[in-house]
Length: 102
Image (cartoon, helix red, strand yellow):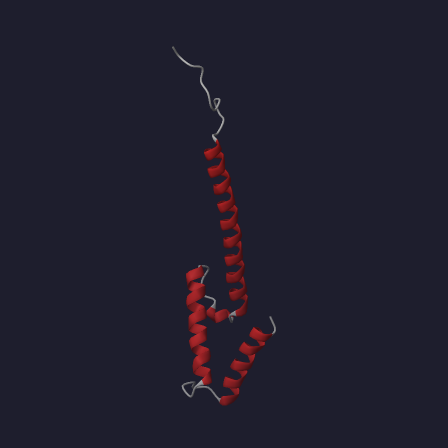
């Protein structure tokens, strides 16, 4: 003897499936917000770096340029810098202006 089918109708999701779907939707929105914040941070970095250190269009090139610029600033603060002391002071002042006026 067959029993009438109980449970979900054609096209309906079970409670577990609905929870999974909602969980995925929440995770997707969270990931979109995270990526938007990361892209905003990369754009801020791109605007902060002098043009010669911005690299190409990739995020990796931008990060490499930032590392190169930090190394350049470190040289400015030590005696390894080959420019004049006025140039060294100018570089450091321009960098601190960027940091403290944001």
